[in-house]
Image (cartoon, rainbow, N blue to C red):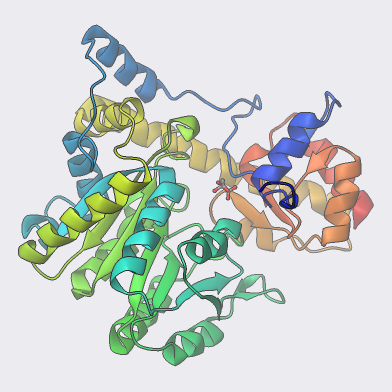
Length: 395
Ligand code: LMR
């Protein structure tokens, strides 16, 4: 039964980590996966996380099953973070939030849920989008299309094209939008552009699915989350996946959530009951530790402040790294203009490097995504010169 099974291709992002791990060169550099490293090249263990863990260790608790929808304190804290405690959707109990296995897990729950209740919808993702979006929605049974997004000539958003795509979508289509820090391009919409996107989504009767994996890495926690609140205020059905992998540096704990906004509290209760069936048939209920850590930090004022400060420091370091990267590239490759890297937002730079150039970098043990996406958050004062020299060489 298994003999005819062919080898699957490597994952376009995590497959790079596999190749990186297999590389025996001690000077290897991984700019592939979206992970924040500090200036020493280490994935940070945030102080707010350590303090929360110390609190949890002092109150040892048995590891019974969590409810299907996850830890109640976590779901509440996340919902308030995402929508605002004083928002109408929270106050009127129209939002439901379930703990999920990272942002990917939240997207998968949302995709399975939508497939049950809006099976004939098509899904639209940005061109380009996070590599896993297409695979994830296709594996849930959807036809996945692209909407116009990136303009390689300007390194920005082709906004007219995007708007035209939205206006041409059939009613009931699911449109996946990056709430902030667009992955992979780092090109975000302005507030005025979001106004027009929200208007188009509402007018056409589309189902917005906001993916927010990088909250806090753009302009700030509130600023990056603003669009979610604005969508919620329109009263349209809305799905939001969010992740704490990056913002809490809790990658391996798989902490994320799916929130859905309904038209009424009664509708929300029915949605939750159905969403629980999706969870139950996928993995039954989520793990305890990461959810407890995040819930503790978000609900403890000193730890929450510490988290906000630590997240701000990560955001600032990435911005400074962009500046230095551009400055050094200007010295080493003066005939190429990389100024656009400064305008990009979040962890990534869609560098414009071709697949062939990326392959050449790999010969020097520098790993990037084939599309030319590099993780700026993986650059540091020790590897920056090596990377800049290598890029200048392959250009
Ligand atoms: C990325 O885009 O590199 C991250 O979101 C990690 C992942 O799961 O792909």
